[in-house]
Image (cartoon, rainbow, N blue to C red; front, side, top):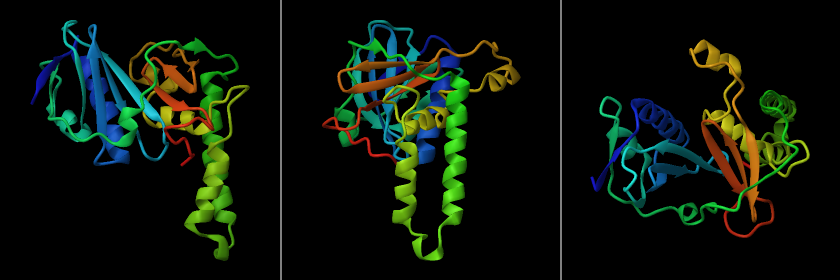
Length: 230
C-alpha cells in the first residue's frame, strides 16, 4: 500500500464500495484512476459495456493529500474499511488507454434540453424493451452477434431531448447507481426529493451529473476516446 485515504465519514466508503462493485461486475479486471486534492477524491472508471467514463467523488478528511495513480478496482475495494472510514491505496498498475484521456477539470457550461430524470429512466426502459423485441423477431439466419450489435448501436446512439447526449450514457448512469428512482430512495429511508440531474459541456466533452456520480464522454466525431455505442 502506498498511502492511506481517510474519508469524511463511513457513508463515503460505503458509496465508493458500491460503485467499485458495479464496475467489477462489468469487468473483473477493472482499473480505476484516483485523483485526490483539496480534500476531495475523484475515482474514474470505464465500464466496457457502455464506453463512457464513470466518475465517483468522495470527501477526504485530509485536505493536504495529493494523489494521482491508477490502481486495480478490485484491490481498492478490498482495502476499503467502512468502520475506520479509510482505505489503503493499492500499488499502481499500468493504466489502460482511457486512463490517459480524462475530462477537463474546468470550463464546464450547462447544456439545456435534458428531459426530466423520470423520462430519462423511461427512455432507457423503452430502449431495453425495444432491443429485446427486435432481437426476438430476428429470423434464424440473422440471429448473429454482428446483427445484434448493429441493433444495439442504433438504439443506444439515439440522443436525448434536444441534446447530443446518447441514450447509452443514461443507461450507464442508471446501471451504475447514479440515476436512482425517487421511490427507491424513499424505501431506503432517504429524502424523497428528486435528485438534481444536469448536463454540462466542455470542449468536445459532455458530462451527465447527478447527486451520486457522473458519466462523461466525448461527442461523436471527436478525436481520442472512442464513443462507439455498445
